[in-house]
Length: 637
Image 1 (cartoon, rainbow, N blue to C red):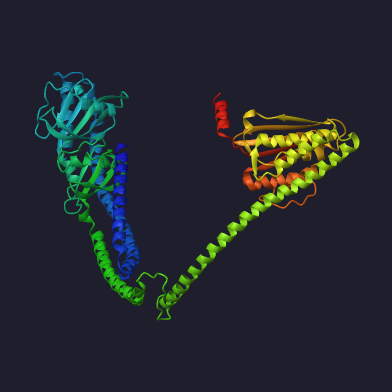
Image 2 (cartoon, one colour):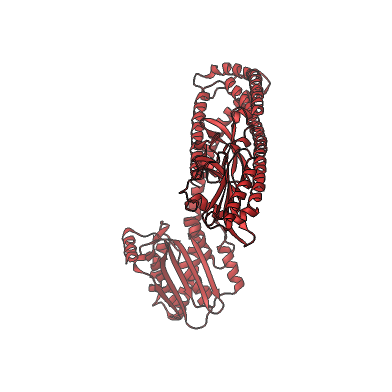
């Protein structure tokens, strides 16, 4: 896992370096081409367009061919390694037959019963018979280094080629390798170890426990030793390239035989250790500065790894031939593409160079001067269109400038006229109702209240005709108060007026004539037709940067159809022309809010028949410095 992380980090570093090099080359190429001639640019384009696909195809083919050849070579190496496994399996099979002859012999079973060596006839006969058996079996086997039988009572009998004596003080039971044999029980081939109980020479051992069928238990150990050269002989004539070789290794990385090659430096590499965990396969790894192919196969009979190592170049002659042919193809293609690119570049740019020479005549600084057109091809048509474009751009620039200036002036005049027209539309409408009120009061009560009504009316007209479009909230509420005073004379206290507004909002700026037309609608359409007492409430408060003005009455309300019609008119996007004869004040307020605040100025309505109507106006909150500080203190509190 650690090796994989390191490999990924190395790949990331390599990719980063490639990207940096590519960016630097791109910057250098752009700087080189910035002032290059069109001939060079076209030549480069032709070469890139032709060579890049060619190179990509060649590289892809080379990679694919190399991969296929690598797989073929790996499969070929694996088949060679299977020959070693075949020889090893035959050797083990033959040795197993020899072991069976010994462990199932009657003299062997008799020897397992001996507890000590003495001079009685049975012991002498038993030891003599088993030695003759061992000598008869071992004398015909090459590479045999000795046969040893050790029973569980600590007695041993053996036969070796030179009649070498086993050390008298040697205890097999005390050796770790002997304990491993007893633990494994089954007969198997063990890797090289020193024969320290005789002369210390290295041997390969085929060993296992002897099972006494008469007593149905294991009672001894059979040890058949071979010269390690028997393992080297199995791969002696196996040829991998010129300098390749085959060696055997235990799963934990120990050598099986001391003879032959054993590349400890290769075995210690993490990629080798990781790959060798599989049953079989092949991989390529750099070793001692050489690209090396490693093939491996796991022996089913021993679990050992049969490994073949060969420099990849020695067995990849096919890859070299493919690579050489690809190099030849690339060189020929580059030469042909270069010649064709130069020819086509010059053929295309020759008319452009002639046009460039004619255009230099207008380099005196007069950039509006026309170029001389001398041909009827694409370059000639380009020159004529360039001339028309220059003159047309000059004309259009002048026209657009004049048109924008006129449009701006007309737009300003139109907005001013709309504001004045809307104000003028409200004033006569209210004046008509007020004059009716004064007439009614004069007829019923005489003239004692005329002065008060006239004073309120004068203040209202003075506020309405002032040239400013905005006023403070307190000024707007004074206008509403004057109107409600006049209404009080008209309805004789039948309509009550209630106001709820925080003092710090009185200095906020609003569009003039925003609240009074709404209150007038409440009086005329909601409370006027109602029998009995009526009320108008005005609640003003701030929320999330907006000033909210809510006008509520408990009048007759309106039907759902009428409310839907009014809501549809109020929700139309942008400015509009009101087509209603009723509620004209409401529509004028909506129009002026849009003109001043656009989409930030809104009016919403809700109503129920017999319960009253609610009109809510929302506009951006605009406070003075003193009011702003007051709001901040409230927020901190």
